Length: 461
Image 1 (tube, rainbow, N blue to C red):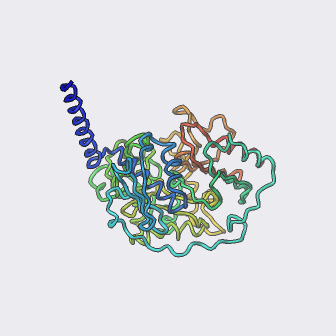
Image 2 (cartoon, one colour):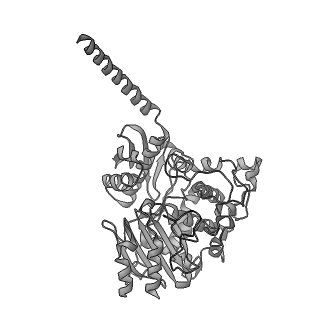
Image 3 (cartoon, rainbow, N blue to C red):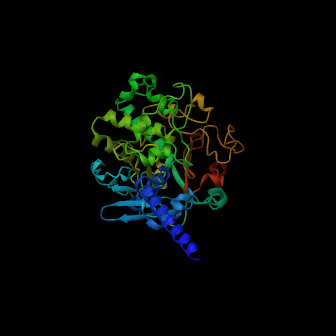
């Protein structure tokens, strides 16, 4: 009996020691997966609390934990409203990460925890005053009474599970819109990779101003000594740089490491080696678009001037008053992923592109720039345009190599801005149609916005 008690005692001691060692390891040297999960949790909760005004617990449960990696279910967050920070960690303790909110710039993940090193952004001034005019000049909407449009928008199979907003623009006016429970015309929503198309437009504003050229090379000092010197801005715009970058969101890959573990995202992406022939291969890369942000910001010279540029050169001129473009911890816009805007403002951007970069008679983008953006990149097999746009819609559930628009009756000139978890804007110039669909719809659900857009094309004919 005594021997048994001694064995039990030593087993208990051993378990306690093992648990203590494990806890110490997780606290002082947490694996990258835990740190990524913490950074993601802190960032998403922070943006939704301080930009959107949502409840932190709801965002953690609904936006972070429900659709994501199993480890996210064990994340806990703490909001400091006075310091405007959100801290997250495994059980609230391990792998802790922090995100901080700044007026006009949303939230920034701070992977190294050095809040003092995060640049203080300039004041962007007052928001645009609300206008009583009809959309897009104002916010007054006179929806169509066409029952065919209403039938499409009231079909949950077409709008998709997790829909948060749908806005339909026909002939320059909103003819119909729908919102999910808890969301409205005033709710800024994350576009994820739809932000890439906006970044391309921002680049276009600098091209028009004569501050940058798409043919420019020698884009980063470290590239001058090797084959990366041959990469042009146009190659980056077309996702054809030849640089290595892993865009797999399933675990710790280049994209998740960049977004949640690297204070200097553009520096991380630009340090990648060549993995293919410049201008001859196509590889989708969020790192590419963050580098574009660094390049155009550098072209403006003054950091504060660069931080104010998207609002002054693009958002204000086309009336995107809700738009919030977020930066990394070193002041570079995360042009690949982090733009919040209301569904109506996403529709304004789509309408702006449909109008070839002209707004109220003013050329904001150079003549022909939008057409150039829509030219197919040969190496993409016709899927991607030269300016950060998709030439076909969502590929959820589509076999590799098959056109995701196959089987849908869509006009040939349709093109798309697409983002993670079911974000999409379809632009169809020949039909004067823009369709915005935003939500929380993981790709595993197999939702395709093409069905919604095809039904609306038919409804407005």
